[in-house]
Amino acid sequence: MIPRQRPVPPSGPGQGPRPSGRGARQGPRQDYLDAFGGDEEDDVFTRARPTYAPPRPRERAPHAPGPAADAVSRESAPVAAGRGDGMPPAGESVSAARSGKGRAFTGIAAAAVTTVLAVVVAGQVTDGRGDEAVRSQSATERAERGSADDATRGDDRPSPSVSPGVVTLTYAQKMSAKYPLAAELKGSGKFDAIPGVAKAPGKGRKYTYRVDVEQGLGLDGELFAQAVQKTLNDDRSWAHGGARTFERIHSGKPDFVITLASPGTTAEWCAKSGLDTTEDNVSCDSAATERVMINAYRWAQGSSTFGDAMYAYRQMLINHEVGHRLGFGHVTCDKDGELAPVMQQQTKFLDHDGIHCRPNPWAFPGS
Image (tube, rainbow, N blue to C red; front, side, top):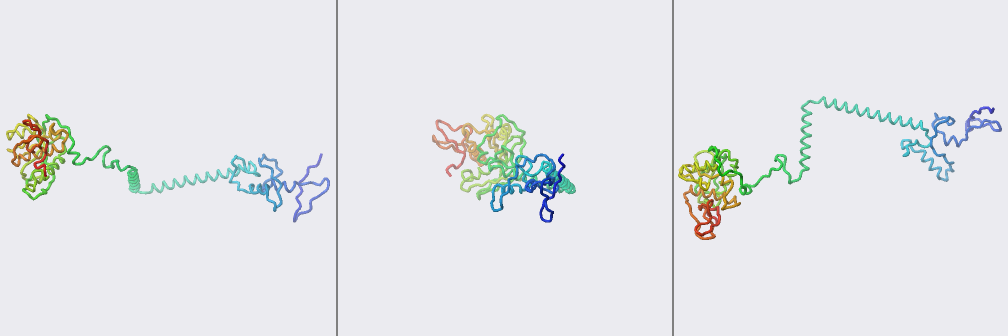
């Protein structure tokens, strides 16, 4: 048997000479150690699993850079860079790579524990606050979210204070619309005075009035009151030329009470002055009482003579019945194609004796 050879320390500065001759124990070549040497803990003679590292090419002289220099640069890269194929870097054993991964996993676990502790501490700090502070913070967050929601909305969309689908109509639009109300309706006979005051805008003779609306009609009493004030003080109406001015009051003794009432209640009040409004379901000035009666059915639905011209028809109703209160009686137009006088019974007819009259809401339409 050949005796087992023992490695001989390489020669170099501070070391003894290397033995020579046949039978001398030969150590590994220096370039082999340089290629596969590593940490001091590695034993290059220990059998280990393949490292899958390509063989290291022989180095060139320092003055001639080439593939060997490139290989050295690649091997000098940090291990943390890793390889895209999942294999450990060249020159590193599988066990060493696993050891590095283990250290990495240990670091990740430590970071996770640190994060959990931070969350717990933050929760404890939050729990230490007063309930009032937490509620205040929640209210602030809700308000901010509401402001953001609002900012995302388009200009044509309604604001939160308005219910979806609700459209605010103008005065003219409200005055031009028809409203549901039965022709045979008989109300309670109880009235509500529309609150508020509308000062007389002119300097002529002042008439005061109150607006009453029968309960349960389902009509807009404020719109009715606004229409009376606007219509009577229009220069085309009885305020023409500054002769008269009209003021709405809520309490005290008015010159008259203009009243919006159901057909049944209107008939009762008109009958007190000897007037029958049931035949054509019309309005009246109950001269024996304080009330000028406006039939709510006509106010809501109009008449065939005016068709869909509800705005003008409502102005005619007010001017006609108040005209009676001021002392004016019924008249008709005299020529075919003329405007009907406001005191003509336009709810009933526009044509008479072969003459066709055109609908007209004003006492002084040419103004």
